[in-house]
Image 1 (tube, rainbow, N blue to C red):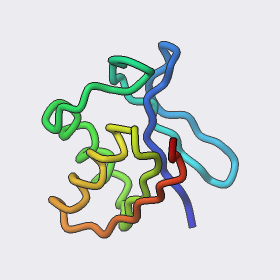
Image 2: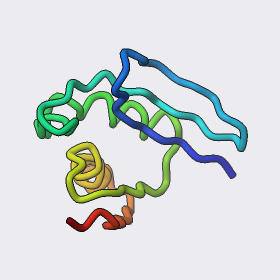
Image 3: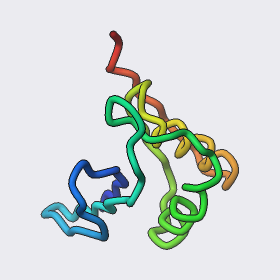
Length: 93
């Protein structure tokens, strides 16, 4: 088994990093808006997320954190592609 994760990075890092496990991390070039959250576009990130989901053969999307627009968009994109998703909210205020 392997895991693939996509995240927005606070630094200027982009691209793919390989970690032990095997874990593959995609650092997505998504600009923050306020409080380090990304602007919820539901259109601008679709091509990137779709490419990652198809390229990696993802069969389940697991998203975290209520304030993460990337997590919310990933769940919507998974539904559009017919993929199951799980949402874990452990960021209550």
